[in-house]
Amino acid sequence: MPQTALITGITGQDGSYLAELLLAEGYVVHGLVRRNSNIVRSRLDHLTSDERIYNESLFLHYGDLDDTTTIRRLIMKAKPDEVYHLAGQSHVGASFEIPETTCEFTAMGTLRLLEILRDCDPLPKFAHASSSEIFGTPTSQPQNEDTPMRPMTPYGVAKAFATQMVRVYREKFDLFACNLICYNHESPRRGESFVTRKITRSAARIRAGKQHDLMLGNLDSQRDWGYAPDYVRGFRAALSHKEPKDFVLATGILHRVSDWLEISFGHLGLDWREHVKFDPRFARSVDPVSLVGDATTAQRDLGWKPQIGFEEMVKQMVEADCQREDN
Ligand code: NAP
Image 1 (cartoon, protein in one colour):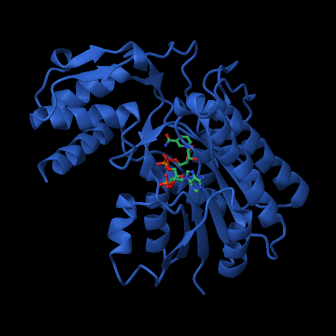
Image 2 (cartoon, rainbow, N blue to C red; image 1 turned 90 degrees about the vertical axis):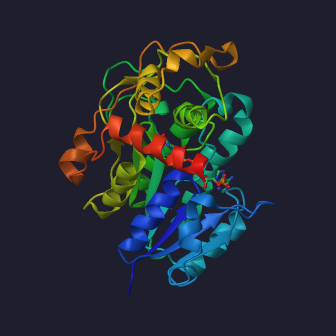
């Protein structure tokens, strides 16, 4: 019998890569999708247009994270061996605009899912996409699985709640549940509202003559940026480990926003200084401490380590955006 997985957030950046990975390994994959007025699911098109895959080994089901009845029914019917919980409002900046929605889906949505799983027999394994934002202003650098949570954004608070609930259900109800504490990770499938993708897309559009200026906030902000397909390998590996535990997934290396500009524009023979303008609307105060992760546990227990480096990832994203602009 093939293994069966349920992915929440399958239409997102990570969900689409994870679906590919699991399908390639022979899994039957069920995905939870929101009902939108627009049916376009661009990150899944290559899978849903393949009749050997869609409705054969990949099945999509309507459901919102606050629709407990529908999710319960889906889980009882699909009987997944593994549940990968990736859905949620994923934008840190937007969480200040819509804190209630962020907490409703990211915090309470995770709790609702755990409550459903608790009633399953047998218990599916569970992976939760946690975030480095749970550390907020950390007391130590780099952070690992034992670093105390001190979230400073509504998104971080919601993830901290969900992360701790996963720990509670693991301890109290013997659920094989893991938090994957992910630092930023990017790819050509990254949403366009994130600064990384905004830069690579703008570089491609400027090269194509469709745009001249790029409005940005602080160029000195630093992040630990990795490559999304590397991170979904970590999710998969965590559920194959002999015991359930939490894992930090990170590169351990900081880069600046200006590094994205140098590589993206430089790759296309452009000088970013001629195009980038400061816009105070996008300026956030520079974090007192830039979060950087220590993935030693994942390296030791899962054999996990990033395979694609920063520069290669940025160039890959620029190339993909150029192709989109040329089509
Ligand atoms: P993403 O591209 O924004 O995808 C989010 C997914 O969640 C989409 O499929 C979205 O569906 C779905 N979703 C949102 N609200 C939902 C709801 N109420 N009900 C059902 N589905 C809902 O995010 P990502 O980059 O793949 O990230 C995956 C997870 O990892 C997220 O939980 C994120 O917070 C976490 N994470 C990401 C990073 C990162 O750097 N990428 C770092 C740390 C943690 P629609 O397509 O309908 O919008």
